[in-house]
Image (spheres, helix red, strand yellow):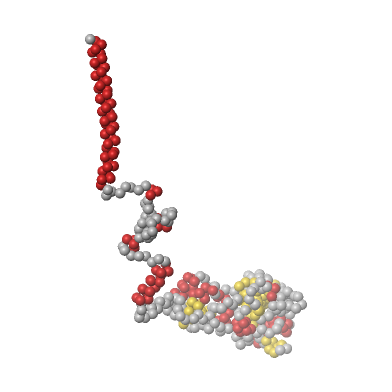
Length: 373
């Protein structure tokens, strides 16, 4: 009984396992039928295209596509597309066609502008400032070149009504001036508007008052050898006389400074041995008879006395050769040492012997005023 029942139980268990396995088989078969059923639905619908693989994608789509089909490689039409097509520009989206080249676009733009302004009068651009068409240079530029400071500083001089051109005070900025024809003054003093140079040299004793010396002696030209512009001296001093001598390239100024008509005064300090009479100054002012005529001093005074040694100051406007030495020698007092300490408004001051200095704008203006320039 037990064995038969055992066999029945095992048979039931085996049947149940077989049924389960059959169920699994059925379930697996069901899964297979599900996939197949989906594919059958796609085939039956036919309206949904299958998604192409990357190697099967076409890149010759869009407005620039070739009707002959895809070409070898991706081509230029696909370079801008992210997923198989070129990017369309904004004009193409709006239905416009962009010009093929920039030259064509420029030509169209030029044609449109020509049509727009056809028949209209020429438009003249505005001038930067009144008088821009005039010739010459701006006044502040000339003043800056003459050494009156920066252009901004020269504009301030004009704003302060300190500048005049041809006798009229200038208040407007940007006025144009001809440096060769117009007369420019600052604070009443003439401005050297051209590239003139003015120097004062404290000539040592033993230097010849020439720019070149054929005998090889030291001369004035040795002190200005590095100058680009040729300079010449104003007047002369004898070899043993020291003091102020002017150098410039302004020919008219040099001529007037030495002409007797303008009477530019020169001041000399002379060392003589006394005693001297009280009326020596009166004798010199009244005139001393020389070989080439009378010579008169404009002013005379005793500066210093040490025993019999006298340091006297003689002022005169004449420029004859050795005139101070000859006048004092004719009066009975030969000169041991002679120094010119002033030439018109230019003074020696503390300038050392052999030193060359450039004159300031004020000094140049005073020189020109002295001779009516």
